[in-house]
Length: 281
Length: 326
Image (tube, rainbow over all chains, first blue to last red; front, side):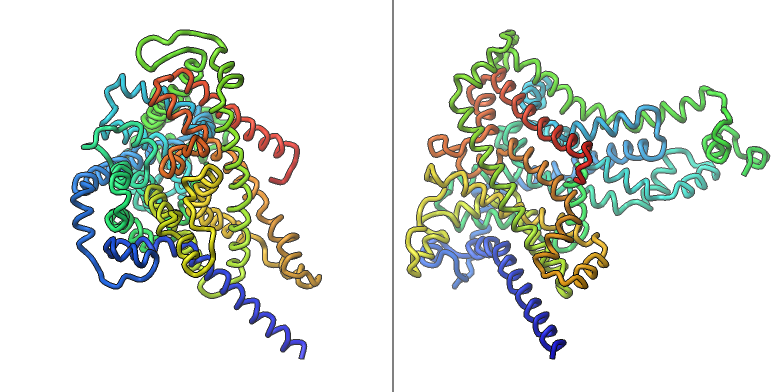
């Protein structure tokens, strides 16, 4: 009798757990679903039925948003920023992490301490002088200017994460290669990279996602519409067509589809990488 | 392995193996500080580290030092800066009502983010840590909003909070009146609405951090609590919460610092309006620096944020030093 009651109580608990969790999932996904619905309605239907399922699918919204939002240009800009930032981050951050984890030259503790302290410096302390420095260096309104800032701001996270991956790799593999006559660069590219690529993939994903979504720095450092990444361009676009919800929703969906697909495919790496980044910084 | 074995091996340059052999020698044996070793131990490693370090210094450290200097000047961003001592700070604390109102809004933001997302995340993580099937699916779906770019989050919630199409309008259609208001257009609701939208995107991230920490709590602590007849609430309060306390306190510190830096969501949704009611320090600095070209003054306001942030960090470090288990 007692065990029966306990069993029933446990079953009830599990049911309530799932019920509450499903409510929370609805809260998390509901707004995204509404966005997806609105992206394929026309404005007349949005007026009649603002939150519900679409009656007729209007795929032409996407073509119209692509045209009016100049996505052809801004997607290219964003991809350019993401690819170059990620490559530069992995090369420079990887080199630094390797130097810090393996060689530990005199002063490497100071570098780690600097990175830790520097990552807590509030952006509002350096943003204003940085803007005027960038103007002096002719880096305003250039993609290079943005890429350099993104690489620098992601450096502490990348170095800490890559360093911890490298520390987890036994040094014996590298020494064996050195005995066989490999030079330092060969050790790095032939031994270290193939064994620690998950770390590099994680850093690449997190940094890439960050650049794809970045708004604040792009808003300040790039004012030339031809150079806009998708974020600032979408902001201007949704401001201009603020009453045309079908159009702006279609534009928003085009922006998040690649992120959602990548996230669904590699969610573990995303979640664990972001969790590590948040705690380590 | 000894030096002799290696050096007698044919075709191997002894220089190549010096760093390798060193690890196996007793630590006290001194190897001559040759030029070669200097290259291997200092020059090459630093050549690896320096590029990104210099870039970071150019983007963060140097402008931060400049920022401290410009705080004591009047400077438009063009030409020379004029040193004016503490005048900027006198203006901030005794004249500028925008600054005071914005600081108040930052503090309200901080209170919101130290309570609402923490309560939601703790609650959901403690439920999720008991779920046996489908845990990973829940984790993924609850985390999903965190990967949506802020411009899209803002666009979604501008829609859902609008009086014509949004949730309020739907509720009034089914008879629940009074919520079909322009949440983002009213002085009393704008800031909280922005915080709500930001939190929709943020709390799942916090939940994942707590969940990860909870999964590291040894299960025998829960077994012991069960043997003692603890109910769910007692279990949470006496086992789960102490077990993840370091994560909670660390994230409380981070959220406190982030609350002073907030800019994006406010700029995207209201740009500080209506009537400055949702203006935060980030927006004030942005407007001073890039709209009014009062860059020296904006730098001084940025320095005050650094001051608040460092107080929070120092408090955290101090409490840890005092032996608080956080």
